[in-house]
Length: 311
Image 1 (tube, rainbow, N blue to C red):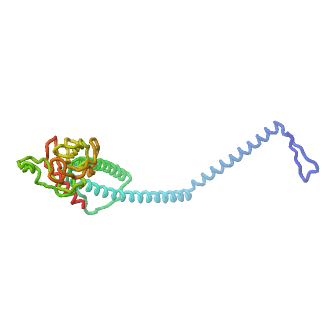
Image 2 (tube, helix red, strand yellow; image 1 turned 180 degrees about the vertical axis):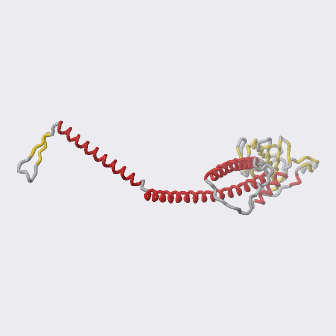
Image 3 (tube, helix red, strand yellow; image 1 turned 60 degrees about the horizontal axis):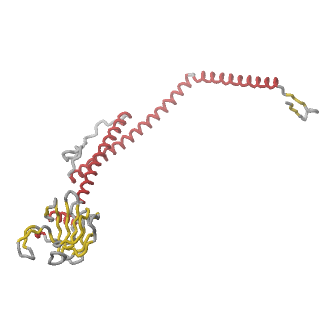
């Protein structure tokens, strides 16, 4: 390789030929230069480290280190204090949550694993004597205990929620809704004088005297067993509510549902009429359990009380 050097002070150009030997020599010189710089850096480092061992510098370093440690310690203590305060607030909220759970359990008649007797948990209090900050270990244990308490309370409230939901479902399938929002003949259930024969006969339901066309609602959710003409009941709907509980709606002028249809509580299923063995427009309503007629009054009175309370 030829390198041509041109300078203002030279009248002629110089040419340098780079041979492998010259290149090797240049690399060797570069290596020696790097080694020299490295040795110089090591010397300065050792010298600087030796100077650091000076008593005055060591005292200054210890003072700075102590100040930094104190600052870090104060920072940690302040954070622990804030966390302890938050922990106390969470414990107070958990106590209020316990009280709420106990009230719900007592109102619904549910006995939870933590409150078999239905009594509220004992309160806590007293004068503040020699208070001290929690250590990190104590705070950690308190947090773990609180987490366990929260998990237990979650299970308890889930149990209450499940029982309330079950009660709601059970109630939804009981005939506790008025089929017609009118007063019924409460004394009509049982033995009475038959209006057609004048003889003593059993009346297995109650009557709601109403104008023709008055909407008839399902007293509870269920499945329509039949919706057809009956020689004595006239246009009759019978609904199965499960657990061998059924209701009958008789003498309707018009049927709005069919057999096998699923109906909801309060759904319009028919209209009042005077079909079948009837002396005038009214709804004949029956409640049967295991096929035996029950007095609908206790269901209807509960439905009426619920309707009044909701107003």
